[in-house]
Length: 280
Figure (cartoon, rainbow, N blue to C red):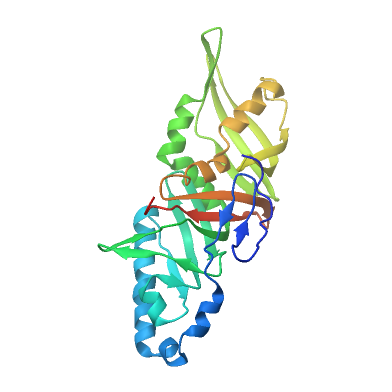
């Protein structure tokens, strides 16, 4: 995929355009709210129904992503809420930790001014994609979670380098941390007759919907392997590149638009989409 570009909103129908991420919002207008009585919008029954709906959404997301989301609905009215129609939804989670993904301070809010879900047989269904803009951060604690994940460890086991069928070296668990607004690496390499620690630091950028390394600088000349061979090693065991592939699946997908290191955290934003799972 190409880099996600800034989305553009057009009303009736509302469209969001981005490379490989084109979103069409439902045609129903926000003017639908005017047809509802004020009394219907502010009663205690409305408040209770709203809280129940929020709880259903929270539980569904927590079950799917093994996280602790808090959901808040912005509704038109009690009548429309019972039909699954609402103005907007915001999601918050102190930590999303799912497979090889770990994001702190996650926040997302719906893009479209009208949204709809179906509650049937005690399950929540989406008859169209539910797009949300999101933001979050990747901390040193998140990097440790990613590296210790089963998915990352499996990839690490495959990360051995051969020449003419002969094993040249194998990578042990890397130490990766954010400091001085750079990504620092200490990579243990097991060779045939020796073990060495490759040290490096790098900046980041978003490319093909992944957070990748740029401006890689290697440490002391204790590195006995050439830089040209070390660069693909760095990219292969870059833990932050797993932040999208781990989450994109049957239930949802994520498009990263921007990533930058500020105050020794990687701040990211983009589009988070709950996939359609109902109807043709």
